[in-house]
Image (cartoon, rainbow, N blue to C red; front, side, top):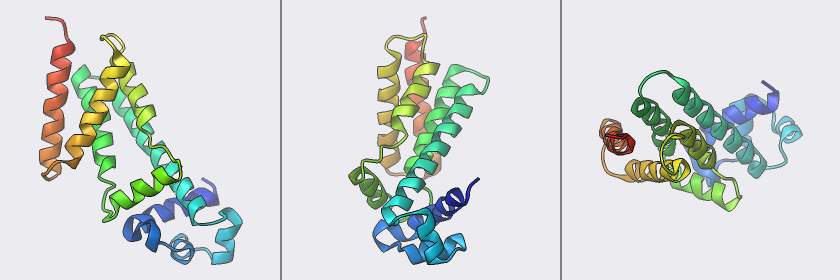
Length: 173
């Protein structure tokens, strides 16, 4: 891990707690345990830090999805595991500013890990008709579930039901 990575890791929590607009380079420097001038040796501005944070978070999401894909077990369990990563990440755990952070990422042209997650899912669904399209539909449905009412247990149960319905529909009788 580089110092730049350490700073980005500390900034994840700062952006989560304060949102993009209320986060300052001062707050990031304090959280990372560096001086503000030292912070500027690694990042040009807050947008630069946010881009590094986005890349780091997306990398973690994809790695977790790949681990879920690669576990043994039934197809439905592995598909559920990959989608659960997306569902839990979509909540941007603990932040009161999920929409602001997502909008900021979009305005900066930072793409979420979704394209890579579709590919990971499509690998699991390779023996089914239209694996890329099915993966895209499942991922979009997961986002919808994440926006619905209910706590984590309810959302996880809904996601499991979706996966069971889709996978049973893909399996030849």
